[in-house]
Image 1 (cartoon, rainbow, N blue to C red):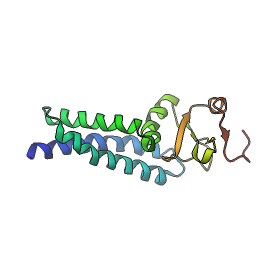
Image 2 (image 1 turned 135 degrees about the horizontal axis):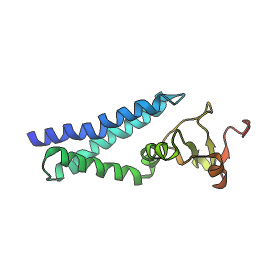
Image 3 (image 1 turned 45 degrees about the vertical axis):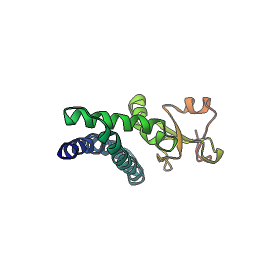
Image 4 (image 1 turned 180 degrees about the vertical axis):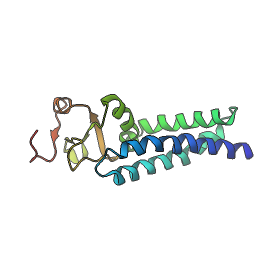
Length: 151
């Protein structure tokens, strides 16, 4: 039981603590960081709790390696589960674009996007795509939201 406690502490470090440093940097660039942080923290807590299952099943040693394997499994799962995909891939697009990406959604067949400079810019689980440029978003047949803003 003690080994599981040590491994779960390592898992908390990999799934909760390490991403928090990156989230603090990302949140400093957002106009409404509280909403983003709320969704992302919920995703991280869910990943940690569900990650205890593979953590209990893995028999790796040392404990940090066991926790890292469980954390990687949970991250891969988050990348393919539709409700969590947008939040899980946001950091990847942040790096790929070299800054905040354009956020697009298919929710309610809207096929719209918002740019980082927009007051409506927000990242939620309802978002479905990220683009680095508006040209990419328009080529994928998305339109800018709100419609009253100039392109």
